[in-house]
Image 1 (cartoon, one colour):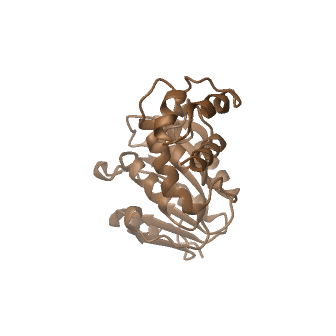
Image 2 (cartoon, one colour; image 1 turned 180 degrees about the vertical axis):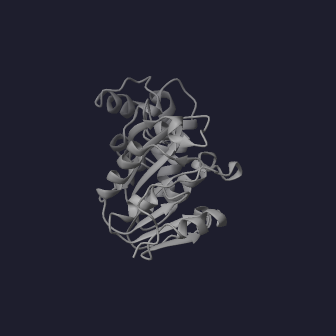
Image 3 (spheres, one colour; image 1 turned 90 degrees about the vertical axis):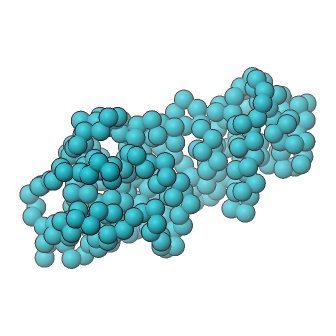
Length: 265
């Protein structure tokens, strides 16, 4: 039998030093849970907080493990959930993720968003992630307005999607910035083999940090052997000008360009 009441009760005393901004907007909670419902497998929630997401996630009827770094909050949450849900006092940044398939879900602490994102991308096992993060981080990770270096470095293995903007008023305490609801999906068929990841990510770093006024000038140096006579036709064949910047490339184009560079290294 459930140990929690079905009445929605929340506690909004989030600790500033832990970046706790509890989600309170019912519409956003419903959309978040609906995204998780489209996935399959056990769910690991990062940062259970006051249970605003935990309680509706329980109703999906799937194994649920909640990681909550604050002991006081974790103890309070255990009193709200059913016996089928496991609440652990644990820091996701140091938690050993299972290698078996699972789904990640969480309203991430805004001041730890980047560190947690890196931890997620390096973690094994998970197939899908539904995340609420800082709005600008969500935009950058999803490549809105052009891909960032971090997004491009992981694109061959993950697909990033921005779902919607979540106003600061949807949280208590109210943060200084809006949030962004997004999904990350591990590609069932990666664009590049796993054993190329380090070489590929080094290649992306060299392109993003390379000198030049566009890819036609940057790539001959960054690709170490890829001649300009091949680069310009390649760019134009994909609707890109020689002055296009690295952020203009799509995920398939990055993978194709890497293979082209590898062939001339």
